[in-house]
Length: 349
Image (cartoon, rainbow, N blue to C red; front, side):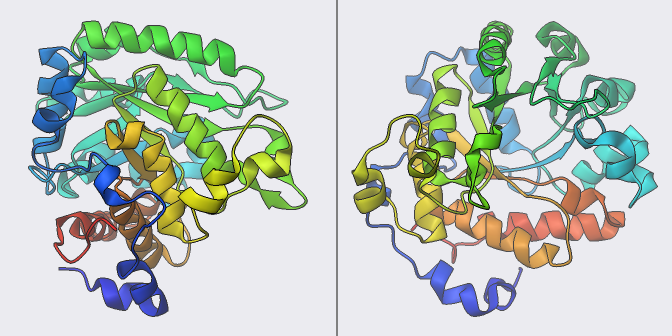
């Protein structure tokens, strides 16, 4: 089992010993082996949706825990194939993407229709597929903060996927159209018994003020989460909160002093707790993204997982940190993330 204390270093007690007072854990619907029976069974999701959600929970090293570890590789479209795969050309081949998810013990592999469709007959019955149906792409110039449908829910269903994923760039000029498209797609997915994941990201130049980037502010990302669950995302993917005070900085929209004075502090676990609370107090699970690959990936991956779990989150979706390195190292990184969620020593704060 991973040495969390050693990897967290000077932050070990700061993160592992923290208690959330603003939004106490007793108010949450936390993840767990009985999450579907205890929480999702109250919802309007049909039996096939619950069956496929259970299949996701039951797969991989975290099977039966109520937590998720997902490998997402749609960066070939979102960030360009060269930027994504030049560090490790092995992953130009979709088969190796799926193999990494399998060897890494993931609950699911998330990618484009093209990636998963190219190897679907070989792998769709071996690991749950999550098809991302819309994308932003960087070949259009000038770049836009926009997501375009690249695939349909029905295509994902025919492929054998158990889930579909989509992104809405909340705050962008195109967000209203994206909300409508994704809402309609999620309704169709639920008709077909598929689970829905929403990448609830913020995009607006005005969210950067005085050299500070508020795209990861707890109050703004929390509202993005609240919009995501409104269109019936079953799982929300969100960037982990790093700061607060976004509404006050951009001087737009509505907030309340209690968000900053009572419900949150500057502690990273309290900030992410607010993100979880915005997902109907955990009735809808929130997974955090793993972030870009860098020089300190093992430490950063474990730190992100510890914060997510202690805040009441449901897991991590980590891509570039895993696939931009040799496969054995990627497997090790994914396993270290999973060890956080398997450890009884890392509790909900």
